[in-house]
Length: 515
Image (cartoon, rainbow, N blue to C red; front, top):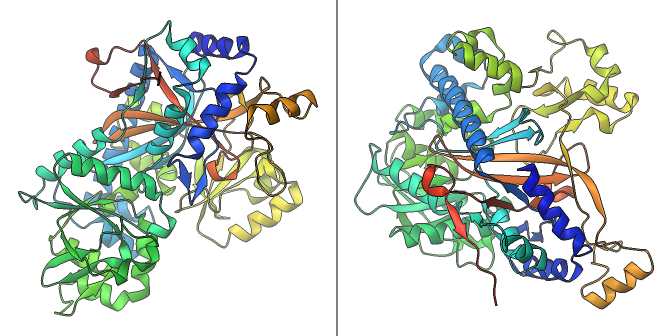
């Protein structure tokens, strides 16, 4: 893997940064669907390359991790004493215990870790089982590289594939649904989220893949759901010019199966606003009145009128509490000796941010050693790395978060590799150059160097569909937190000299440069 990475880097350096190619790649990206809340994502011009040996290693990591998280989830469901240790709210606990109608506890997840590419050591960052995303980022970034001189030069001497991340999940979803208790012959599938905060372009791509597989598919906002007469209905928002108008369009359609992208804590927040109604639904006494939004979803799940993939049970692994519980003695009682060793080596020390569990003074005096995170959430909202604060500010932050539902975790040193810096922008966010002449002028004046590389921290995400290793996502950043919408860069993943026929994992996608 490292030799391949070095070979690609050498191609870039021989082309003195490949400025024409970089402009071409950025132009492709700018016109693509690689957007987060309507802003084009940042891209590193150096992709990550994985050979057969690296993929086999990551396959083993994914299998072991999924096996442990699956055991934890099943233990939570069957053991009330163990369940109580998570300290989830009574409502969340009831949601998790709702039967899913299928066997797979975690249908889809992305296992994020800090991987040392020199020796294969790593520490886990988080487990994303709700709202697992970034398939589209990888696809668009790789597509933007295909016609560049540096890629074509490298590909002339290597067999290079991209990853196919959409069809394998669509097929896994269909397989889980077909084996579920509520399967029907011609189901209507809904990709469900709170669309104002969603990665809509990615979800539209999944909608298209379901339709190519022969399934009628809707893109639905949670607010458009209605449950009446034992049927869940939703509006297809895929043709709307404004997602907020989804309730106004009269195209309500029956839903049989849901690919859930709406994260649990957002659904929970909506349900908690109507607790009396929720209790009636959970007791089977909601009456004959139509229900809307998250209440409609809940009623359909309780009455087994819709197949929810994934179920609320995915929250056991998704919650940051899982990191606390992986180190708990009660968890080690049902893990094997090898699994316990795996946890000890790869799961950073984590506990609840509570005065009775930690030495508060020690935490305040060693900010560089710690990171704090809300027990639930996504997109690094509310996550703080101590190394970004001085002691005084960190101490104030700790005092504040002691009053909230937080965990504290040892800060893991992140592996660094060189990559390009984003195209420079002015104070308003406008790119300082859009063509070769402008870029060369900036280079002449010493304001930009296309061949300049800077160290970036690397986050490696392992996609897992139905318990199987299915792909890789790479993000790079220069801050303590690697965040795509706060200066982070998406890095394309390339499979090099890969023999897919010999292994059951990652499905390759052919790359064909335009002539």
